[in-house]
Amino acid sequence: MFATGSQGVVPAGYQVSVLDSSGNNEISSNDTVIVTNAQGQEVSRSQLSGDDIYALRFRESMINSVEQSGKGWDFDPGLQLVKIRDSALNPPQTRLYTDRYGWQQQETVLERNPFWEVVNRGGQRFLLARTSDDQGNAIRPSDALNDLFNHPERYSVDCATPMAIFNLKATLDTIGEDDFNRNVGQLTLSGWYDQQDGNYDGGFIGKVRTAQAGAITVNGVSNLAGETALFDPTQGDTLIPGNSYYFDKPGDNTSDEQGWNAIYLGQNDQGQYRFWSSSVGVVNLNFQPGSWQPASGFTNYYLGAAIANPNIDRLQSWDMDGSVRA
Image (tube, rainbow, N blue to C red; front, top):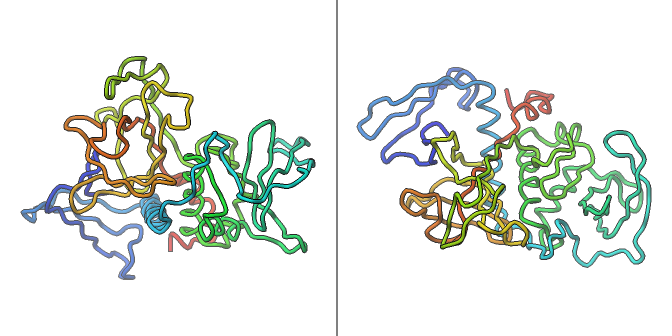
């Protein structure tokens, strides 16, 4: 984050050290980060802000949970977005719920297990956390979320929903259970849907650039109008571990193979770029020289200019006990 350039590369021999201003043996705000090159010369010096601490701890939590998840959840063909396996209700149940605007709406419960339900709202499937079990005992949002990780075999999802799941998990691990459960509300998952504001950003701060038709060609196939532009550091695009990115398949905006959402984990010792995608796991990539088209892994795709950064303002507002700042 401090030693990498916009292309996510740490130059050979670079070292990062921290001057512990508080003497608490932990990275905290007002500490000074110093980057030196292979010759021991100082390249940069910066003081950590409160925003830096939230970003660092969120990204650390994100990478840890991704690394421990293996391949994650099975991919659900047919673009159903979310599914609980072997849990269909027969017959489905219809009930009322209150939407985020305070209006009463109808939903149909299609599937249920001890922690989650799949409901149909207006033709879209949502994975909805249960608030109580069959005996009326309360279910905490953190317990429902952790069941997705403890028992991934129970669930299948598209490749976008895991981005929102990992965002929530990194938030939980960053601010702790009490603050998470106090603020998150009833977990509602479906692709990039964010229950907090109704936007389709997965709870991240997203930035997307699109390209004109024919601007990008991969293995003889050109992009359609509206597909993502090619990742380009000269346009301000940056590779930062813990961010979410998108590999776009040019010429395809309808099939379930049109793209892969992926979390960047940094480089390995061989200089390959490490990305994680659901049902695939970690993929080590080399990009073609002078291009952001993979030379291996994700072939027939290109790294698009769709970047999701952590929502630092939300993290800070949810950290009500100040544990991250401490």
